[in-house]
Image (spheres, rainbow, N blue to C red):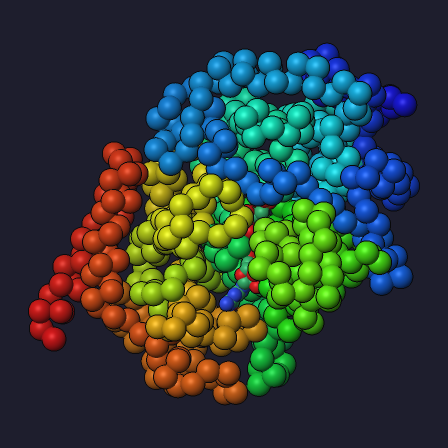
Length: 593
Ligand code: GTP
Ligand code: SPV
Ligand code: MN
């Protein structure tokens, strides 16, 4: 069943042959991205019990997948940047010498596809005709990965057409192999435009276009070429007057990007429309007009399932209604699904993410906290028509935000670009289920990119500073926090659609329509500037969510010293000076009051 290579690209054909010689699959299938092919792969996956059909009346063309129980999230401790020198990877990345990494993984790849099919998956990250876009080819022995790539990227013939006979492409070799955590590695070779991933079939470890190419390899390329590859959603906001503004926002994994990108404003914001351009990744370049322009390189959503429901995110619920895959959520015997934070209570009995019977009232979670849906962007009722625009969309504001139960107020505006870069560089977030093996508590996550910067983190921050010279008309920069909690552990801010109230202030600021209060730490909304009509929070809760406590901030600024020490000698001095300045101001102010 080996299909002939449908391309004249000699280097591509040669690489596929070499990879097959190493991994020795029984068959090689070149993916064309057609509907017929998707049907065929799906049928094969169902026959092999890789996919379980859901109730096709209720969930047309939707399927369920249980991953291996030891393989449920990204593995940061096994993710490696293989640059020629350790310094190029920097203090925040794992590093291996390229020759050592190639040798180590060659031993694992040796014959690993025996008895299996190798899928050749050509794909484009970005709109098919955009000069921003990049082509990758992923060789994988997982039909589940091939099907996911078909949803998440522009996959198949369209990519081979773009490549032509000699186009440049990222070489991604992926095998689930024996799915052993002891033989699991996600290795990046920026200088070879190559990714080698082995031992995992899950998410960002295995869908190589996403975190591996679009962010790790992408960020290294972006630095060289003078643009930005970021872990950011892109949203379109249309005012009742029909004016469109675009913002990009970086929140760490499982901290609200998909939800913000698909937000439905509160009823009192009648006439406002929020549309999604992207929910996870932004590639941004300076346009001829001196503004920053962004494209979403992806074509689908690999979203966190728990907490998603008709109230919190109706657009996501509509997006998964058909043609979607569900991984590690809970299901019923008759082909329905459920997860924690579903619209209705759990039925009496479920099959949990492990495949075991689960009874209502059980202490165990029925869905894995990092269970996910894969849905085509085209299903999103709020999809922006600009998503396929080859030139992207112009960005008015950049937003950074983490999951912080204390200290960080609902919203602050940076005084200037350098202060904004400092805000992103020192952003912290409490850990989530999106990666395994992380210590609980707050970790610094610069621009939500800690696990995704493909080179030295200090140099990455310098690149952000350098961008100021390239962007004559830069976006304003903001820090937000939807996750501040009260003493009794409850969220102070209702979040989700109500985040529109904060977004509206940001949009108005970016357009120069509203004033602000200058505080020691940044500009904030003045009393009455946030539209709180009908908000489901008491004035006390809003006050607590927006409060700047100088005592908490002194501790916060002091604790940033450890992070700066970790970044080491490439930490740009303007960034550390920002902290010194703020700390001195806060200390002086506390001495007065
Ligand atoms: P990745 O796909 O891992 O990059 O995550 P993401 O940043 O897209 O996060 P997502 O929007 O999927 O949200 C993650 C979790 O946070 C979900 O359980 C959401 O329900 C929850 N969440 C999102 N927005 C808010 C908010 O404004 N307030 C609160 N309290 N929770 C939120
Ligand atoms: C993230 O962890 O930021 C994700 C999910 O978007 S994954 O594709 O697994 O990286
Ligand atoms: Mn993400």
